[in-house]
Length: 229
Image (cartoon, rainbow, N blue to C red):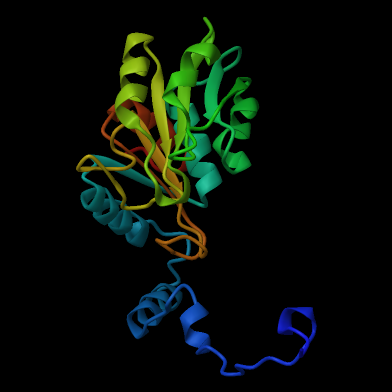
């Protein structure tokens, strides 16, 4: 018997898959023209294209407000600041996520309490929230993991009962739905990464969306020092 290929033997099938299948993100001529427009106008630090993106992104998700940030970590950080997370507070977060979903809270003086995951959704288990609750709990960080939405109805019911803010991390599920509603627009604020490895890829970028004007203004002041509206 010949040696199997995965043990070092010769491969039977040698046809290589087309390389463009694995190229992401896809860069079009329209993308290149938009980039060159910024370069030629010397508009690197201007806000016109940023504000245009924020308007369109908010409309796409059905949110009132959007803030573009330098990356998803900053967007999540701004969401925490936006809901008023601060010294002595606690935020409940799922154990299955990237560190940016929770550790930035410590820069605000808050602590993280980890909740177990639901084995069906791989997101936060609503049934474990009660165990994580304390008088210091201020917010819940929901992560829609691997494009699968968390079970938002019981999470929102729990948050309303205990007067907690809900932040949705949509970095793995941009544009996804939960019972007909766009992810990121169900809680008090949604934030996400749009870096090159994400399904909605925009180079290196983060975005925050909310319908709450107070959260929006706090997050805007936190992320963009030169903007007031």
